[in-house]
Image 1: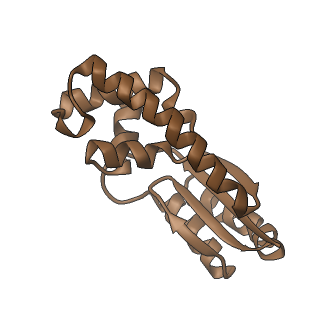
Image 2: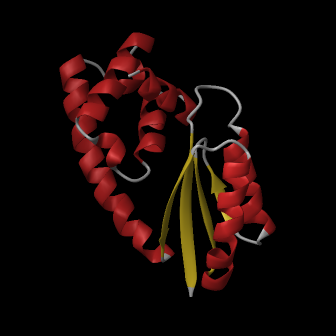
Length: 155
């Protein structure tokens, strides 16, 4: 059986290079032979269930030893993510349409202050509680995920 572990380390940093704690956690997963998908503050690692479960202590240690103040972890069989993405997509699409209507423009056409406002409005509606929503919103805005996290941290 295969498993997917998704882990996020904090503190978040704005634009630029990812923080050492995120990089070291990913490296620990790769050293354990897991396939990774690296994001600015979240990483997915897949592999055989025993390999994933065996790697979790090393991943946690690497992140915490490298400056993480918090590590959030979710483990599940990878097949369930397709349904998650479909549900996230339709719910997020509705939120984005509402925000675009409120701001009078598509997210991509907004200037920087408009994009910051859009992120705040989406956060108020709970958009960033949805799985993979930061990446989806970043793509719609035409910015990086780091930029979206930066906008979120400015609150």
